[in-house]
Amino acid sequence: MRTNKLDGVICTAGVLLMTALLAGCAKPAPAPEAAPAETPPPVAPAIPDAPPPTETLPAPDGAPASPVQPPPDAPPPTEPSPAPKPTAANEPALDSMSVATPSAKASVAVDLRYSFDAAALPGQPVTLHLAAVPRVNGSNLRVSVKDVAGIQLASGPPNLQKTNGSDVYRQQFSVTRSNDSPSQLRVLVTMDYASGSAFGFYSIPLDGGTNAQKQDSVKQR
Image (tube, rainbow, N blue to C red; front, side, top):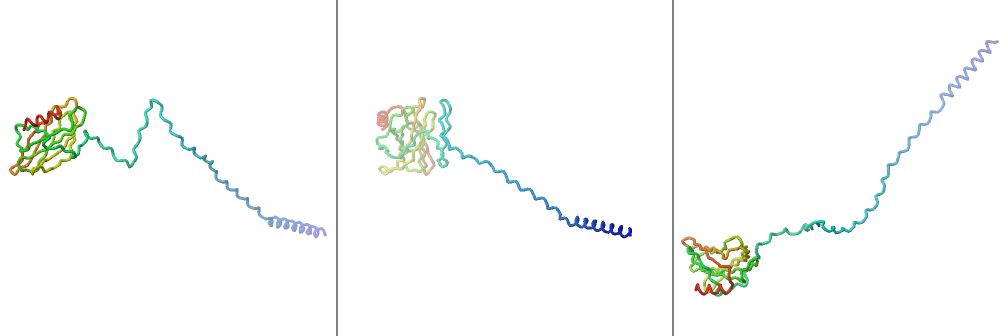
């Protein structure tokens, strides 16, 4: 009788234990933890509007001013000429011009005449008119003024004229004297002939006015 009760107790305890185990197995698994929310990126602070440019204040007295820059499309600067270049306009009449003095060794058959449009004073540019008249037929006649210290020269374009059936080669030079310049100019004249070439130097005085030039011209006639 006791054995049956003991068996019943053991059976009941086994059922309760089995029920507890089954209840423990049927317990739902814990829910996964939620992922942390993403942190929003930092927002850059707003940049305030830049203030409008202020006017450039003038440099104080004694401070060097900044140089003015030329525009990009400005033409390149040109070097100033030593004297203004003359033009071929307003040529003096041939008879009114003085005759230049040739050197003793001149072999070219050319008469050289000259005339200034004003007195050749120091520091004042004047125009020297030259006219070379060949006495014989030739070619490639050239007239040039020799460069000397104390005198600035600028030549104009040569010009060929016909006067009484003869060729007259005219050319102008702008002449500017300094205080210590020589008193005369030397002009070289060259010309080609059928038998060769010839040249000659001529002297042109710088001192004196137009009256002195006319007197020299009359004496040499």
